[in-house]
Length: 426
Image (cartoon, rainbow, N blue to C red; front, side):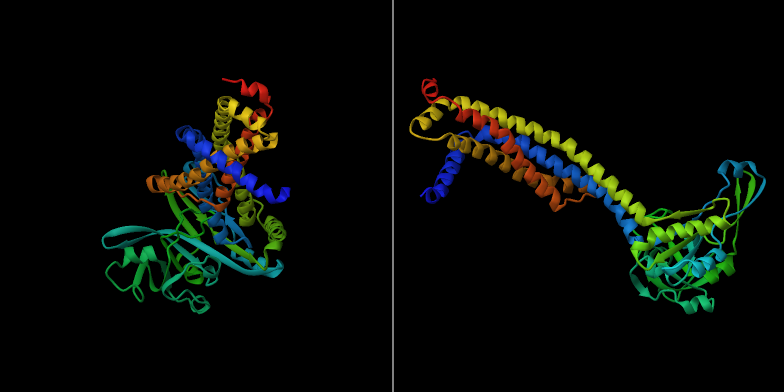
């Protein structure tokens, strides 16, 4: 019999709770403001934090978690370069290192050597700074860039030393604004290359492991670049002449599977250490960098969430304060309900329903405001923001929890009022 009437009793309590909130609509709305701003601030701050780390994480993921990067490091400091009149240094990854890697390191899918020169190209009476990148055809398997037109470099280009180039979309627009790109020629450092392909420009800039390419790159076969530019780089700095011999600037080693990356990286480090006593080769593991970045992101989100959670705490305290005042105002009503047979749990449920409705309504409106704020931040400041479904669900759950926790004490206090004393209350 009790089970039959239980749903109707709950519905009646909910109806009564909503009716009492509507009687004080303005007070209820002002009480919800704390929850609205609290939930909105949680969502907005998490969105900003998520957006700030998204680009860095995406750059690492694009390179691949199954790759180990070897980079040449100049062991001669810039101070020594300024002081030396005729300084000559030899450092970095060599072609012999690549041969050793192929012959001794297991579980390797492909090895992609890279040679880089910073050059200037004259076009339409203007100079354009570019990176001339000598590499193999496997580069485009490693760093995925959609092909816009033409073709990519091939093994035949390397073998026959074809003076061909693949350029980025941005370079094509700057070099050939009113001409056909494919089949045209680009002059870099006194050498001429025929353009055979155009790829989508990179979205990032930098010269580190997280951005192996740029939006102003010209890719040519490594054999051709070695023949045209050699390994010696001469530069003048503060009146001194600096000569550097670098055979390869980067080598990307892609593994058969992600599970062997760290073990193989350790083997590569041991092998390189035997032949490079000057520590002029740095080993970087994007998988480790990705884990560290994700760990930092989680900590950052926790800190931001905790700061924004203070607003929710203030909102919860406001709800408790209003409900305690409501209990005082409705003391006589509580006494009448108890006198005609209402039980304590019914009084508790009545006030608890009111607080949960307040907090959940505030949480729902806060989610709407929380969706608008990141969009506004992105439009005004240009910052990347990401609103995840997890942050929305978390905010709603927190608002529900705040309503239960901060509404429980006023509800229990109301249920413990003595009926006789409550009826005498003026």
